[in-house]
Image (cartoon, rainbow, N blue to C red; front, top):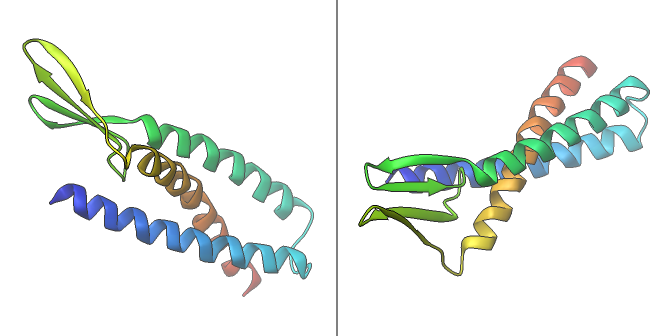
Length: 121
């Protein structure tokens, strides 16, 4: 159940990231902000890429014998069997990993768009 909740959270963040990027694109292209704000957006994009890569490879325990790779979308599960960790991947491994990177990229974009919105009010 927790994995489903994380997946829903990830989809909401990805949607919010799309809205935030659209807002920032329109705001920058209409020259409502400029200069340091554009440099700030570039820095936020780099931070988002780094955060996305971290979320794609983060490992957390699911049970004493299982570990999950990826947050918020589960991309791989490792299971302890006979003292060895076995990995279980499937056809959704790559889309989940990409979703994790997109989610990580979207989080700082949402926060930056909120700051820009509050600043322009």
